[in-house]
View 1 (cartoon, rainbow, N blue to C red):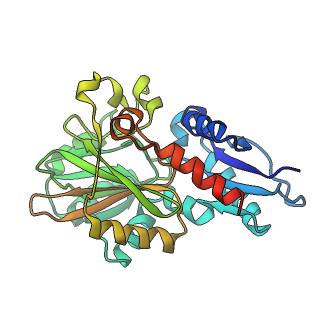
View 2 (view 1 turned 135 degrees about the vertical axis):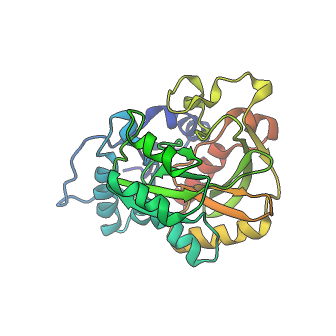
Amino acid sequence: MTKKIYVIHENNEWTIHLEKRLQELNLPYELWHLNEGTVNLQEAPPEGVFYSRMSASSHTRNHRYAPELTGAVLDWLEFHGRTVFNGSQALQYELSKVKQYTQLERLGIQTPKTVVAVGKSKIVDAAKQLNMVPFITKHNRAGKGLGVQLFYSIEGLEEYLNSKRFEEPVDGITLVQQYIQSPGQFITRAEFIGGRYIYSVRVDTSEGFELCPADACQIGDLYCPVGEQPKQNMKFEIVENAHPELITKFEQFLHESKIAIAGIEFIVDEQGNAYAYDVNTNTNYNADAEEAYGKYGMLELAKFLGEQLHN
């Protein structure tokens, strides 16, 4: 039987560009959509290369237990010694910003000051412990800016918590976090394939926190309205040599965390201090930004998977 590249995911729209590149390179592949399914632990998985694109935001697409099913599949694959990229350990990072922050800090990468709250009634307590204004709240298991709110006072937080606007996090964990002000109103997302840096994307944050770069997000996804802008006002621009000393630390972090493909977001404050705040292990790429730059993330990813298949 011919070995294949198996792409594990839960969102067809986010696989379209990777599929095109795999077809362009004439690479055999198969998509495993893991919203629902079974795992027969008595059977061995097929031979090939497996790449997980499971997303922490799957519950927003009514795929609540896709990460749990993916966890079972990844454990099964790894038990049988299959080649897996972004395996079970990477999935843990995708589903928990707390895990991301503790490991980043362990390697000397600064993250925003954060207090963890479980239970709606404890979120105000967490904000008081943080003792900083302004501050933000966000979901621990999230994506696309889910649950991100900016507050200038405890009273504002209390009003939000008592309103219909409050969003319960899917895992019950809310993070109360130091707000980092970017003087240029942008964040930077560094992209890595095979654990190696490929480029950085400068993302305009002047209109809010929901910063999904995927083309699918730019055609009407209500959770990610970044694409409702004319092309001359695009939010995403690829830049070079963004904080090379930080890139080296990020590569070390990815190596130690067994994450092969990721986008790591960071922000620089007025004093020039850089804070990493999100590790996205099912990273997407912005087509317009790549067209302007002349380098294509999904093509590089397809080449990487093809090389691993033929090793």
